[in-house]
Image (cartoon, rainbow, N blue to C red):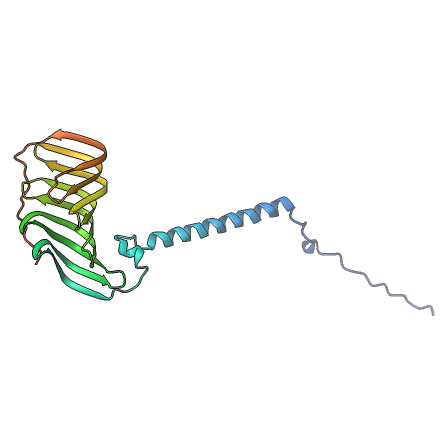
Length: 222
Protein backbone atom coordinates (compact mmCIF):
# COMPACT_ATOMS: atom_id res chain seq x y z
CA UNK A 1 0.00 0.00 0.00
CA UNK A 2 1.10 3.50 -0.69
CA UNK A 3 1.90 5.91 2.22
CA UNK A 4 -0.65 8.63 3.03
CA UNK A 5 0.90 12.07 3.24
CA UNK A 6 -0.60 14.49 5.79
CA UNK A 7 -0.40 18.24 5.17
CA UNK A 8 -0.63 20.71 8.05
CA UNK A 9 -2.87 23.69 7.27
CA UNK A 10 -1.88 26.93 9.07
CA UNK A 11 -4.79 29.10 10.28
CA UNK A 12 -5.07 32.55 8.68
CA UNK A 13 -3.48 35.45 10.59
CA UNK A 14 -5.83 37.42 12.82
CA UNK A 15 -6.23 40.88 11.26
CA UNK A 16 -6.74 42.35 14.74
CA UNK A 17 -3.14 41.57 15.65
CA UNK A 18 -1.64 43.63 12.89
CA UNK A 19 1.08 46.03 14.08
CA UNK A 20 -0.08 49.66 14.10
CA UNK A 21 1.66 52.15 11.90
CA UNK A 22 4.40 54.28 13.60
CA UNK A 23 3.26 57.78 14.71
CA UNK A 24 4.61 60.58 12.49
CA UNK A 25 7.61 62.46 13.90
CA UNK A 26 5.87 65.84 13.64
CA UNK A 27 3.03 64.63 15.89
CA UNK A 28 5.49 63.32 18.47
CA UNK A 29 7.35 66.66 18.48
CA UNK A 30 4.11 68.59 18.99
CA UNK A 31 3.21 66.37 21.95
CA UNK A 32 6.71 66.80 23.43
CA UNK A 33 6.61 70.61 23.21
CA UNK A 34 3.06 70.66 24.63
CA UNK A 35 4.16 68.69 27.71
CA UNK A 36 7.26 70.91 28.06
CA UNK A 37 5.14 74.08 27.94
CA UNK A 38 2.63 72.71 30.47
CA UNK A 39 5.45 71.80 32.87
CA UNK A 40 6.99 75.28 32.59
CA UNK A 41 3.59 76.90 33.22
CA UNK A 42 3.02 74.71 36.28
CA UNK A 43 6.46 75.58 37.72
CA UNK A 44 5.78 79.29 37.14
CA UNK A 45 2.41 79.13 38.90
CA UNK A 46 3.94 77.30 41.88
CA UNK A 47 6.73 79.90 42.18
CA UNK A 48 4.20 82.75 42.00
CA UNK A 49 2.09 81.10 44.70
CA UNK A 50 5.11 80.78 46.99
CA UNK A 51 6.01 84.44 46.49
CA UNK A 52 2.47 85.59 47.24
CA UNK A 53 2.22 83.40 50.32
CA UNK A 54 5.41 84.88 51.82
CA UNK A 55 4.65 87.71 54.24
CA UNK A 56 5.29 91.17 52.79
CA UNK A 57 7.81 93.22 54.73
CA UNK A 58 5.88 95.71 56.84
CA UNK A 59 9.00 97.29 58.33
CA UNK A 60 12.75 97.29 57.76
CA UNK A 61 12.96 94.62 60.45
CA UNK A 62 11.60 92.00 58.03
CA UNK A 63 14.47 92.59 55.62
CA UNK A 64 17.43 93.60 57.76
CA UNK A 65 17.12 91.07 60.57
CA UNK A 66 16.87 88.11 58.18
CA UNK A 67 14.83 86.03 60.60
CA UNK A 68 17.09 86.55 63.64
CA UNK A 69 15.31 86.66 66.98
CA UNK A 70 15.46 89.90 68.99
CA UNK A 71 17.59 90.02 72.10
CA UNK A 72 14.63 91.35 74.08
CA UNK A 73 10.96 92.16 73.58
CA UNK A 74 9.64 94.96 75.77
CA UNK A 75 5.98 95.75 76.27
CA UNK A 76 5.06 99.41 76.90
CA UNK A 77 8.45 100.64 75.70
CA UNK A 78 9.46 104.11 76.95
CA UNK A 79 12.52 106.27 76.21
CA UNK A 80 13.46 109.78 77.35
CA UNK A 81 16.19 111.90 75.77
CA UNK A 82 17.70 114.88 77.60
CA UNK A 83 20.30 117.48 76.66
CA UNK A 84 22.13 119.16 79.56
CA UNK A 85 19.43 117.97 81.91
CA UNK A 86 16.54 119.31 79.81
CA UNK A 87 14.02 116.98 78.18
CA UNK A 88 14.33 116.94 74.39
CA UNK A 89 12.27 113.94 73.35
CA UNK A 90 10.00 111.32 74.92
CA UNK A 91 9.08 108.14 73.08
CA UNK A 92 6.35 105.57 73.75
CA UNK A 93 5.51 102.29 71.95
CA UNK A 94 3.16 99.42 72.69
CA UNK A 95 5.99 96.96 72.05
CA UNK A 96 9.65 97.12 71.04
CA UNK A 97 12.00 94.39 69.77
CA UNK A 98 15.62 95.14 70.66
CA UNK A 99 18.64 94.03 68.62
CA UNK A 100 21.66 94.91 70.73
CA UNK A 101 24.33 94.18 68.11
CA UNK A 102 22.74 96.66 65.72
CA UNK A 103 21.63 99.03 68.50
CA UNK A 104 18.15 99.22 67.02
CA UNK A 105 14.65 98.98 68.50
CA UNK A 106 11.77 98.07 66.18
CA UNK A 107 8.60 99.47 67.71
CA UNK A 108 4.85 99.39 67.04
CA UNK A 109 2.08 101.90 67.72
CA UNK A 110 4.20 105.01 68.24
CA UNK A 111 3.62 108.16 70.26
CA UNK A 112 6.47 110.69 70.64
CA UNK A 113 6.78 114.16 72.15
CA UNK A 114 9.32 116.83 71.16
CA UNK A 115 10.43 119.60 73.54
CA UNK A 116 12.14 122.99 73.31
CA UNK A 117 13.53 124.43 76.56
CA UNK A 118 11.50 121.88 78.52
CA UNK A 119 8.30 122.98 76.76
CA UNK A 120 6.23 120.51 74.73
CA UNK A 121 6.18 121.76 71.12
CA UNK A 122 4.97 118.88 68.93
CA UNK A 123 3.55 115.36 69.01
CA UNK A 124 4.19 112.53 66.56
CA UNK A 125 2.16 109.35 66.02
CA UNK A 126 2.88 106.45 63.62
CA UNK A 127 2.23 102.76 63.08
CA UNK A 128 5.90 101.73 63.43
CA UNK A 129 9.32 103.18 64.16
CA UNK A 130 12.97 102.13 64.14
CA UNK A 131 14.99 103.81 66.89
CA UNK A 132 18.77 103.88 67.17
CA UNK A 133 19.20 103.18 70.89
CA UNK A 134 22.58 104.99 70.94
CA UNK A 135 21.65 108.25 69.20
CA UNK A 136 17.81 108.18 69.41
CA UNK A 137 17.66 108.87 65.66
CA UNK A 138 14.24 107.66 64.57
CA UNK A 139 12.53 106.52 61.38
CA UNK A 140 8.73 106.57 61.74
CA UNK A 141 6.62 104.60 59.26
CA UNK A 142 2.97 104.24 58.38
CA UNK A 143 0.32 106.95 58.88
CA UNK A 144 2.92 109.34 60.27
CA UNK A 145 1.39 112.51 61.70
CA UNK A 146 3.15 115.41 63.42
CA UNK A 147 1.02 118.05 65.17
CA UNK A 148 2.58 121.30 66.42
CA UNK A 149 1.33 123.36 69.37
CA UNK A 150 0.07 126.13 67.05
CA UNK A 151 -2.17 123.70 65.16
CA UNK A 152 0.09 123.08 62.16
CA UNK A 153 0.17 119.49 60.97
CA UNK A 154 2.27 117.20 58.77
CA UNK A 155 1.16 113.88 57.26
CA UNK A 156 3.35 111.39 55.39
CA UNK A 157 4.21 107.68 55.27
CA UNK A 158 7.86 107.81 56.36
CA UNK A 159 9.71 110.42 58.40
CA UNK A 160 13.26 110.53 59.75
CA UNK A 161 14.30 112.56 62.79
CA UNK A 162 17.90 113.61 63.52
CA UNK A 163 18.18 114.50 67.23
CA UNK A 164 21.50 116.30 66.77
CA UNK A 165 19.94 118.95 64.52
CA UNK A 166 16.25 118.48 65.44
CA UNK A 167 15.64 117.98 61.72
CA UNK A 168 12.82 115.92 60.22
CA UNK A 169 13.08 114.67 56.65
CA UNK A 170 11.08 112.63 54.17
CA UNK A 171 11.60 111.74 50.52
CA UNK A 172 7.98 110.67 50.04
CA UNK A 173 4.74 112.56 49.49
CA UNK A 174 3.93 114.97 52.27
CA UNK A 175 0.84 116.97 53.24
CA UNK A 176 1.37 120.06 55.40
CA UNK A 177 -1.26 122.31 57.01
CA UNK A 178 0.35 125.53 58.22
CA UNK A 179 -1.42 128.82 58.88
CA UNK A 180 -3.75 129.52 55.98
CA UNK A 181 -1.82 127.18 53.62
CA UNK A 182 -2.49 123.58 52.71
CA UNK A 183 0.59 122.24 50.92
CA UNK A 184 1.32 118.97 49.17
CA UNK A 185 4.76 118.06 47.82
CA UNK A 186 7.26 115.26 47.33
CA UNK A 187 10.22 115.43 49.71
CA UNK A 188 10.61 117.83 52.63
CA UNK A 189 13.04 118.98 55.30
CA UNK A 190 12.04 121.00 58.40
CA UNK A 191 12.36 121.07 62.18
CA UNK A 192 9.91 119.49 64.62
CA UNK A 193 7.99 122.78 64.90
CA UNK A 194 7.50 122.81 61.11
CA UNK A 195 9.71 125.85 60.70
CA UNK A 196 12.35 126.35 58.01
CA UNK A 197 10.44 124.06 55.66
CA UNK A 198 12.12 123.16 52.36
CA UNK A 199 10.12 121.14 49.83
CA UNK A 200 11.89 119.11 47.13
CA UNK A 201 9.48 119.02 44.17
CA UNK A 202 5.87 118.90 42.94
CA UNK A 203 4.78 121.61 45.37
CA UNK A 204 1.10 122.60 45.31
CA UNK A 205 -0.53 125.12 47.64
CA UNK A 206 -4.11 126.13 48.31
CA UNK A 207 -5.90 128.21 50.93
CA UNK A 208 -7.58 126.58 53.92
CA UNK A 209 -9.86 127.68 56.72
CA UNK A 210 -7.56 128.87 59.51
CA UNK A 211 -10.19 127.77 62.04
CA UNK A 212 -9.44 124.16 61.12
CA UNK A 213 -6.59 123.75 63.58
CA UNK A 214 -5.66 120.41 65.06
CA UNK A 215 -6.20 119.34 68.65
CA UNK A 216 -2.72 119.48 70.14
CA UNK A 217 -3.51 117.64 73.38
CA UNK A 218 -3.46 113.90 72.76
CA UNK A 219 -3.50 111.35 75.57
CA UNK A 220 -0.36 109.30 76.04
CA UNK A 221 -0.74 105.60 75.24
CA UNK A 222 0.19 104.57 78.80
